[in-house]
Amino acid sequence: MGDAQRGAGSRPPAPGRDPGLQPERTRLAWRRTTLSCTVVALLAGRRLLRSTAPFAVDVALAALVALLWLTFVAVSHRRVRAMATGRPPDLPAWIALLLAGCTVTLAVFGAAIVVS
Amino acid sequence: MILRDGLRSVGAAVRLWWAPARVREEGSTPDYRFSLANERTFLAWLRTGLALVGGGFAVDQFLPRLSGTLRLTCTVVLLVAGALCALRAVNHWVRCELAMRRGEDLPLSRFPSVLALGVGVLAAVLVVLVVLGRTG
Image 1 (spheres, rainbow over the protein chains, first blue to last red):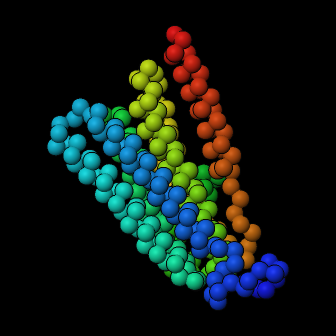
Image 2: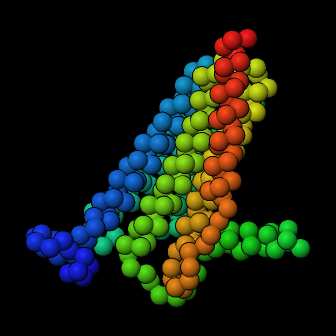
């Protein structure tokens, strides 16, 4: 945050703003991550379209995928909003665990569908 | 001996995941920008995991000419690797946060090398299989 880190001749950043744009970079990293999750959820949904299981089972599985995706996006959005503050608080551990849990569940879901 | 130590450290790591408050009790709070960098590293690993899971789905859906067993094996290997990657992302994030708070060196790991080799081998195998599948 010191003056030494600011480029010579550049305007001083607004108070409380990191000249390295760390919150912005982190916010974009969250956006990329939700995008990755969206691709995986779409692939999972596409797999369900070819499923030979009973209709009710497919609907339940599709609902599960939708729920996982919604959880992922909602939790990420919460963190993205936190990035809008000048000094974001630390990432809460439950968010990290929940996102990893969503990813693992998607993997288990895929394995279950493929094996069955 | 090595196995027992390994199991113990895995147990300690998992306990730490569930007790994040204990991380805060250690050492001093690092510059928030370092914590954000650690968070981005966590997200990058999480995306790697998601990409592997997506790759598993892709192998299953887009290689219909591959024999059933091979396709199943590749798919499951990719899905398991993706799940491991996601769990490892959390573990590494907690360990880095702890190391920063204590002022220690960041943890080293063989995981990136192992993952890179595994992905490389799997990619090579898939290329061979696809080429053989198209010509055979």
